[in-house]
Image (tube, rainbow, N blue to C red; front, side, top):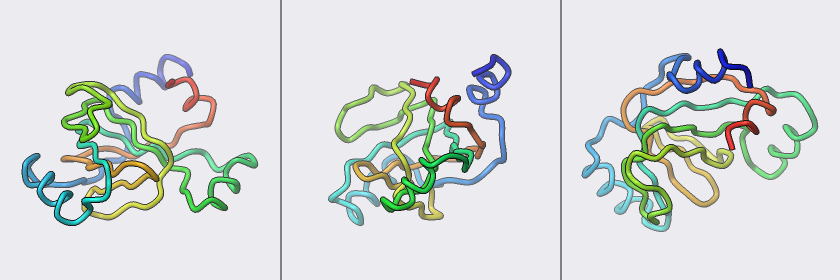
Length: 131
């Protein structure tokens, strides 16, 4: 990944999109009431990374019921399983589904996208450099 691309990602540049507008406490109550079976992670300063649809991996993801989209968040607020500390960054696995209220589902975790975030396209090689 070149330095300009890294700066764009880390600064949250991209198309602005709205996420969840609930307070942290209300978001936790909502998730526990409606999606109690999921581990959850509330994040701020987030970007939806949409992978460039080239290569055989794209069809392989879709055949497994996944979308080639991930969350990259620069600020973990709460992680129900305590995998991440407050203020850590996180990169999700691939999207299972997305709901307009800022709810991003993977196979293992429900990411609650708090506030406004961005959407950016990313190549597979750039994604792999975020490890």
